[in-house]
Image (tube, rainbow, N blue to C red):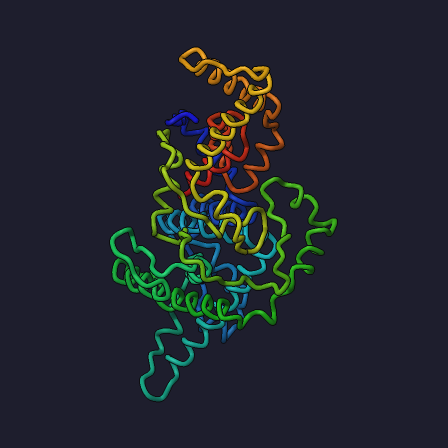
Length: 410
């Protein structure tokens, strides 16, 4: 294997590869929110009080459409840009686990539950006889961040780690991560909706603890929807994630692996999204841990006890392969000696080296990766550019290419 892999690609190419790696529903939400903001910007629409979530209007005029219009409208360019950049790693990871249709249902469920919790808290605080705060009924909440906080709670629960990093500055206990993030945002940006974010956190905890399981269909229902004719156009798209996991209960399970890393909000993923678009030199890592969360396309999380031993140390695996090649070459060359002992020396060592190289070359000539193999690696969540570079570095060996790609994700 070559010690260094130089990835030289234009910004446009890397941006295209980055976008191709975002699953169907996640990219659809990004496009929808971006288009809505651009249309509002072009036509000069700024009457967000008509589309935001306003508890008083929802109760007095029963304007339930605000539950969904409030999550696709944003008040500024930084607002929509920050929310969508945070949504990319969260939505992509959860969509690959759940599938596109299930994640769509979960987002609708979270948006609805966020609105209900927001409304209940506003009513209790505004009309309680002890210490009322009626202004809460007139506060307008807008943006996708409420759903994002719900997804942060879900993803943190799935990660199974004990601590999370906030802005890369300090670590906090994982179970308090969302609440501490809420406090940090409120201190940095006092104008953000405290109740909207808090409702998202509470909704995420309700989902994590299984309170929504009774209203979440099982996998067979989602699979039936995917097989319907009216959805065939979307299903045929390469970025669409099928709900083909083995989790039949419909909810996302948690697990107790302590060696996995997480891709939550503000823990380095946003910077990695930017840095992945720039040409960079990548060095093969010396060690790598098992990523139990790597699900494939639309699979639920599960642990494979035999997987860690096969990819736990790529260097040792490569060395074992080289040793196997040398051993096999010795066995192949032994009968040809006709019982005579071959004299030792530099010419014999050179012959063995050339013969081993010839054996490896013939092996790789027999297994040239096809476009279908490359597309399979891309469907596993890797970028096309990274897949091509890894396959080239592995000399056509897909197993070694997967090890390189998994090492780059650490």
